[in-house]
Amino acid sequence: MTKVTRRPPGATARNGLPAAQAGFSLLEMLVVIAIMLTVMAIAAPSLLRAIASYRLESNARGVSSLIQRTRFEAMRRNRTTCTGFVAVGSEGRYVMNTDCTVPPAANPDAPTVGTPATVMWYLNNAPQLPPSFNGLPPGYDATTMVAPASYRVVFSPRGTAMVDDGAGNLIIATRIQAICLLGRRGADLPNVDDAVLITVTPVGNVKLFKWNRTTAFWAPL
Image (cartoon, rainbow, N blue to C red; front, side, top):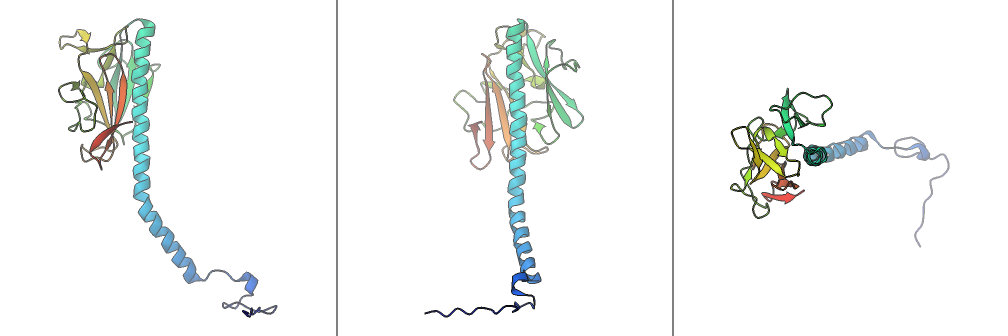
């Protein structure tokens, strides 16, 4: 049988305090704090990347929603309706433009999606396709896709996508239009951690794809 030794009433702990009031020693507290700081240092980069990724996806979905709303408005109003990009300092604004002016006319009542300085439009005022098409569906490549000038997407009253023919006339789009957003300014594909590709087919369907740097593939978002 194991003998249990009980401390008599009034006995003290090893630090000289009554047993009921004994707490952590200074050394024990320092060890706990050191462990917490180490865990935070390891977790912080992952947390920051997750926040940046969420911010990018949120902005990309906002741009996608505005494009889809513009298509709906074109059919509802029975008139050609556009979207357009406006740089405001280090930030960007994507607006619905019923007059289809280039650049978009300043209209405080127009639906707008603001993108912060942390989100980069690839490549700012000179839109470009991403250098990699790995993982995109068949038919999504450099020969069938185009980056619309000034990120301008135009819809006819029938809801089909239209493009400028170079002479100021709008014609039915024959290629998929693609807008690429990056989660970090000054970054570049394919080495950037986060990127989202917003695509608009000639018939007006909008699809989003997320870049995965680890696999070097685009995946549906």
